[in-house]
Length: 203
Image (tube, rainbow, N blue to C red; front, side):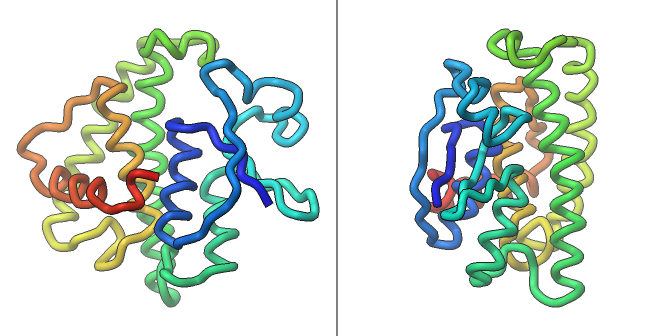
């Protein structure tokens, strides 16, 4: 088993944080995304979408998409439960994971990919107006999240989950995306600081 990794890129990092929370070690194969190595033939043979991360199992089976890879490891190593416990707990985590994915992770990524000069060769066509349009979308969701976090410690309830990992990665990317989180969103800021202080955040 080996994990083709893309360094500080959001999706590869999401899997590394998940594995760190589980205490799972998987051999990493570094892929130079800055050098567009993920677009080359060796990676395309594993993932025709030419994206990372890619998990290659011992029998040659390929898994792509960060959350799918995390679900695989959740089934192999159910503790600590990062996709929730019981019918309601799992549904709440799925709900908040999806909300984080579409309303924060996705909007922050769109702002970054369509506005940052370094992404010009990656996002073709790069549409600056779409990048700008996603900034207020991210902030609108953060305002909702801030109210939710007034009554609990984590995104989906009282336990840390994959939804928090997605949120952490997205929040860390607001800076390069040039999205300023308002100081009055105290609950979001407290939540993000707590997540960033976990040892897994350094993975």
